[in-house]
Length: 474
Picture 1 (cartoon, rainbow, N blue to C red):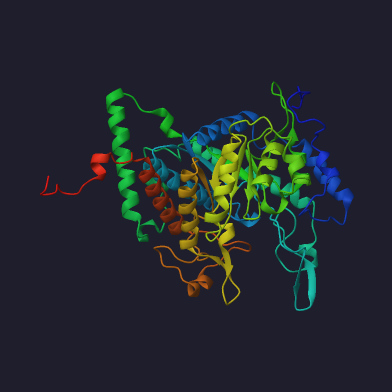
Picture 2 (cartoon, one colour):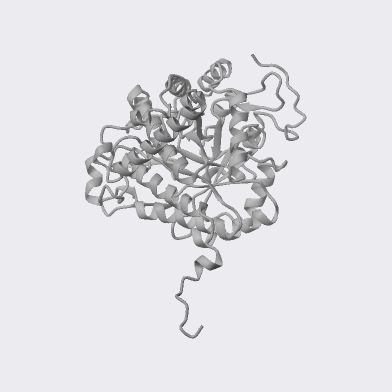
């Protein structure tokens, strides 16, 4: 039920529709405005997909991550497909994120915030509005929420009914995840049940199983001491996220709720603004500045310290911890140059943000055969450099953002599983950006856990550092 709420904390002159007075990038053009209006009217009356108290819980946890008390793991498909809204695909994505978080908890000795890049990631920005094949030009594919991938006029024409299908599949996905978690799927007493079919073939399977055994032994030890089962270990918090790209869709699920001030986007816990739509005077920043959700902001190598501070002021004028996450996607070749001035400026101004590294997007390249891919070593390189640079600047890396899948696809090159460019055609499934497969994602988590473990060790004392044998003259 919607009620009138106190809007004293809402930015001046903001409404869920005020973005319509700004330039809106990356929006589809619908041939039938009345059909769009009808679909949005239905969306506006359907139940919300998430709740305000879940959103506030996430914001509290992200504030803890900004203080170094937690670590954010965000991951999932580049763009979801309606066809993949089925139990096995959803469970496999949940499994890989649970396994990765287990590894990070063990290595980093911090609680992990788990945010799935799904249950709403049905729209994608594109570099061009049209695509041409064999002399035929059609609108580009913008995700299943907007049109379909098949290259026909009927499929590529934006269809507002797909907004309703996206809402329905998002709801089905969220409810299935909630059922799995409430039913004990994430129980740390039995993490061995999270294994996927080909885990035994991974070069890191033994290391992961040692971690599982160690955690199991620790739980049994604590329960023996206390004489009771640690019930809180039977379930975990799990949140959803997507890029808030299609502003009409986001607007339709933006509501006021009883006993809370402000407006909430109730289609997801954690929406983010993409690199292509972060113009300070644009429609997306206008929309995002008024919602009460914690939000992410993708930033690339083109952002200056001055621009970053202006965006922070627009999106988080109260400097609220947990409100704003910078998801930096700078590229392995640019992070050393671009990240230090950003971190220094933000620290100097005392702004509260959470630094989250997206090492995927700026490391995309195309092979000589025209296949989009990403190299494991470059992804890892950006991650390691970001960790070091932020530490040297007096800040800290508080999260990671991966495009990944629980399937054993061949879309990214490298890693211990040995995927080469010649292997890409073997099982390349994505219609948009390449993803880490299961083994690559687990290897990345293990390497990140080692990095976190190293940073947690206290520096050696002067006596430990001076290990030279005593001189015979002394």
